[in-house]
Amino acid sequence: MQAFVKLTSIPAALPLINIDTDMIIPKQFLRTIKRTGLSAGLFYEMRFDEQGNPKSDFVLHREPYTKSTILVTGDNFGCGSSREHAPWALLDFGIRCIIAPSYSDIFFNNCFKNGILPISIPQAQLDELTAAAEEKREITIDLEQQKIVCGNSVYTFDIDPFRKHCLMNGLDDIGLTLEKESLITSYEQTRAQDKPWL
Picture 1 (cartoon, helix red, strand yellow):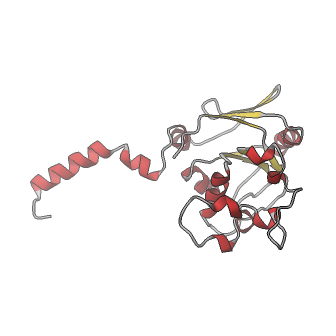
Picture 2 (spheres, rainbow, N blue to C red):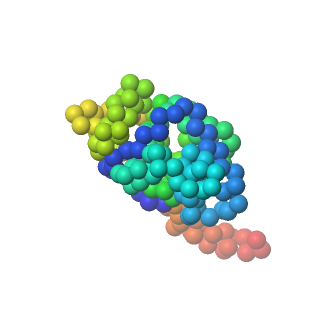
Picture 3 (cartoon, rainbow, N blue to C red):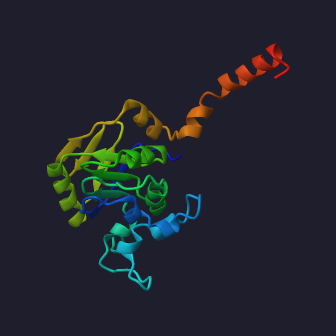
């Protein structure tokens, strides 16, 4: 998993509430367990018409938002079914941070496991970040300092220390296990000597 320390980008604004996981990645794109290629289905019904042609007015089809790594969006983001393909699709597009007032619990947890930082902030602060996005101004996310810098405004955000450690060090569940590799190897060697019948 790619480490997350500091991120600067012009954010893409999607100011809608209750964007569910089926809107993020529709069911027809769930036929794979690969984490790559899913960006083609990201927000598919909002991004494309019935013939599959891009909707030029959708934010992620407009410059400079085609390269945004930060998404500023509305309340209750990621609600609906618990599909892990939703954060996979966002990450495959290049989104590394989502800023919203609130999230579905399962989606929120899945973000951390896949290297995406979901930040919760009050609506008033979100409004300023949405305005920055619409004005094509960069913002910076500093995970170590737990700050969002937007021009002269600086907002702090909370994050669980363990999740912060994992993101800053690029540790998913496998990476966390591999941190204990020497202890696991030592245990296996001792067990093989003490209990050779196992």
